Image (cartoon, rainbow, N blue to C red; front, side):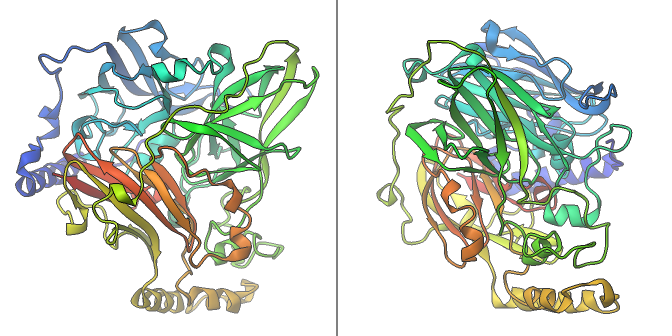
Length: 568
């Protein structure tokens, strides 16, 4: 879990980047991280104060009596309502936070890990210095102070580590927790509360024979994204919920590094969502299944009314295809079972028994008590300000977010992450509302580059164990060779999906996912399938600064599939 890092060199590079960025963007007042925010701001009077600590501990995860080494957030409420911090005993997940719109919040973060770290308030509309940008990462023994006003409406968010090149590992080993925001409009709806308002945090892990977490296994896991073979819900395997015969609100978070879930009941009962990532919906949305990409959240209305005591329902992730490159899916049997060890004739690339798109159970819900009272599902929830092209100032020239899938290097807009570089297309005026197009970039020169590299890689290989080798080579020559689904996350203010265009999707693959997208309400992450074009509308209001946009496949993020918008 501890990573070998030359801290002196890392700090030198970080401070050099700070100096270069400050020269380029002097109005940002980018400061040395040691002095950026190590003490409270005079005159900022918080309604809520919380002291957070991150440290390594051992907790029970598996049901075999073992304890697993994790990285964990601990929190102590210094000021604010009693229900603000709800710690979870014997669990690696951080405490659940409950904040209210309009509250002023101060959070002290003490890094007691053996490596640098910083906390990101995912989905929260906060100033640059409180967003958890990796340029503010602090070293072991240091403190960072966040201060912000809660501008979000009622919804479900979360917080997690955002340390440069360590986000994937630190989130995987435990540095994440749920964050709920309430407001007065939500309270008037009479939605399930208390014991009937529950988290459902889904993650996949991989354990060794000693019950210890195993993370990335070579470049294959980095390029394709880490996939575990054990499904945990709220930090535990084989999750089972005892429920009453009434309605519940379950706040579902995909906390996995790269796994995508296709949520559905085993008996075919549709799922109803009442909230997207960052807000309640205008009205309930019912789907036969719901697609949930990494970092996406939905508030589900699960109603067990009328079901007799003893009834068991299982929530599954159903099978789907097309989220991974064709050669990968063929290797794992998603495009016709190959048998044996698959196309490559190797086992070191088959690091998980659960491939992307496989079917597996997530959690069991057992009705253990019959009750007569249950809240009714509201026909209308909240009124949202629906944005259209009339609201943007660039309807005919959307800002691009081009997903670039080059050999061994996933990028965005063709460039790697850099603190001291902002392209013209990444400079945005404060107060503007922009149309953004997210799409897969497959230019002819990129196709040629990938095809040439593929031919080079194949030279000298033992083709006898390749099974459909020529078929793979034919696919590798095409522009979609490395195409895979990417969950694109934008920091700062939330956005709305304007359109989802099928473009050059594989029709058979797309048919397995098309009915599961809920693209209404405010979002901070959108799952983009291969060949799709997704247009969004994003306001850039209230705060100047550098705000990240990146793939929330955390292995891709750590490889540099991340850039900054510069709001000025």
